[in-house]
Image 1 (cartoon, rainbow, N blue to C red):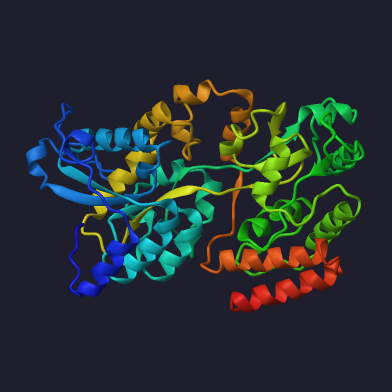
Image 2 (tube, rainbow, N blue to C red; image 1 turned 90 degrees about the vertical axis):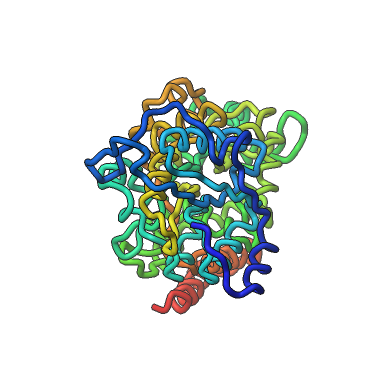
Length: 440
């Protein structure tokens, strides 16, 4: 879908927000020759075209950040090449954008009725686009078989009023890194199997005082600056203590015995020197990478960051964790919904993911992809992340208020672990603000 804006000023605004390019010909994502067979089956449609000539040529625009990043550019080129070779009547125009600009770009273009046909997104952006009526639910353009193939937890975050508004693509499960040397020094040979064991080990590691280099040691990490990440990372503690952000119907339930217990636990650990307060996530990564933290929750992308540490990875002990994922969406203004469905199905399915994993390290979002050779040869730490992907829960991102809500929770966390205010009072205050924010 290539739409021309009537209002010139809108076009200027859009072009200033993105760095767009159409990759074609020799660069691999435009009109390429192909030796593949002609007609292809459409997801959800039992009929197969007998001749490619029967299909009218179609061009779809795909806006993404993956094609612009050195780590994934080759993978994106291979996937788009593969798709065009299979579906020869479809041309894909790839619009590259810096990750930090994608959300604003999509919101602006959707408001101007000039959205791309399909795009790579964070699952945290989907609700805002849905609330603009800018998206086609993907369960309307993908077959029931394909929809059932996606991991249930991965698609739950963007399931709104019974419709699924984005297709999970790349899963980033948050699991627990642990420093094997600090664990051994504290007298433990295995990582914790329950939340109680985890807390006990955190205290024991902190009592070591310093590591082999003489640097201060902490039992665990905690991000406590007023940023969204600091808010949603504490949900791991909340869930482990029996609390939750909201119920199945979306009602805010943050004020509960479990949430209060989690914040009391965090406050006491700060008081006892088990946690270094006032840090950002990047600060905690530096400390763990320097061998100064026993336990640290993070994504699989950080394994290389901690290369100097003798570490292992386990899933959240006795509790639950979350993933922050890359999804694919189709826009309501597209004239080529069927082709968008084919594209999304291909990129997230075995054919596309085979090409992705040939060129980059990623964790899939569909059961049918698990049999790829790539996933049979993971190292022990990546194996943990891979196994977590199919069972881990999504963040509660069904509302565009999510990031604002997480900042509110992070501010409450600061009141508890920096100002040392009463956790019960703070959680009650935060809960009231969340309810107002969500119109409850």
